[in-house]
Length: 379
Image (cartoon, rainbow, N blue to C red):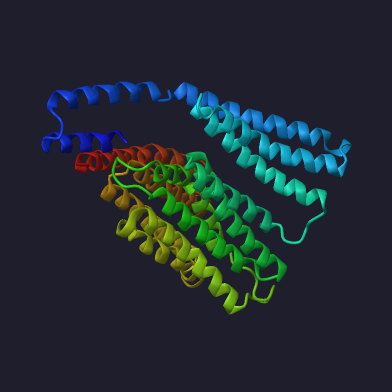
């Protein structure tokens, strides 16, 4: 917003609509009020912690008294929990907007609890992912109305959780081969996490893509570990019947298409490296099946180097750091699984020490050099 009004102010001054003295007065006024409206990080941390504790405490109190309440009282209490936080947020919106945002977020969290508690009250066990769908729709409606960042974060988390739950339910209900469903889910989560992590380029970005980047940063290593586990395990032939081609096709289209759609929606054509990431992830499975598990280690190293190169290209240090972490994990897993078993106890310990010291030193030097290069290339 500051950049927007500053550009407009310069434009109006250049066009002669306002004189330079008035422009300076407007600029000083806006900067002063921007500082007073800015929420300091201790206050933001206190609001986030307070909202978390308040929601957890209320849900804990309700769960402790749940068995002593009648069904009608349970349902009324569930509705009250959903409504009271949004009502309180509307009451304080003019006095303390940050508090209003926190209370609205608690209200959306309480909506999820209310949906599943209502299902328990009325013994609704038809299709459990439907609860996540309703919760995600509630978060989407709240974000559309409020344009609040916590609501966007909840939507960006709940929508993939709903799709993953739908896929798990479809695979489990038909007793399909476990590897079929696991691979589709692992690839979809990994690519979506990568799309979140790469949602911004450079230093300036809107708050929604920056929030996606933080979600990706918190989940990229777990998603990579799940993908590695699914690509290195294969079930016994004939143990369970394979998934039908139609359902498998739908799963793969969603697992690849949705992350690509998110990437191009946030970055435009700047998200083109995601297509290479999708091809890299898909080739993991035939590579591990036909070339053996040993071939997966250089493939993972190649993927880590690609993530680092993408970070250097976009001047984003987090991608460089996570690429270096995945590369280090690949080398470590290779040593412990392939090299250490062939050495004696003392030699293996010496190798661990040398690998940690020398490899860590070399990797850190390269990582710092790449981050410095990326920052120097930033306009």
